[in-house]
Length: 127
Image 1: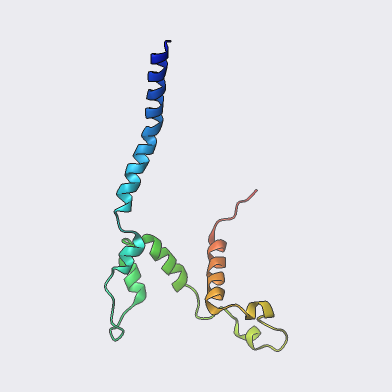
Image 2: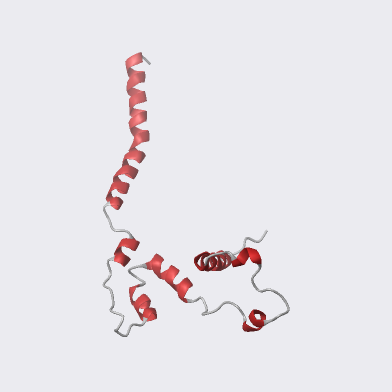
């Protein structure tokens, strides 16, 4: 094989290997021009506080349009009003919240509880 044929062959290999990159780049540019699910959710009409509004019905209606957000809402809306049993909360037998937990902000505690619930919902690998 002469030098010009080798260079031509090498150029063809590079063009072939970059074809997948070009396809990925084109598809990512197309996707960038689309609204994300979060943007679609935030663009939804707002309801006045005085109106009667059923959040569960709203998510039931809009879950096909916002599937990921609907799963997150389902997890959050399924959290009971309180996660502390009443007997241990008022028991003098021991502290319910230790000193390290007492310094956490309510938002952090809520995030930890939800994350623990999500992690617990994944199937366990049995070995």
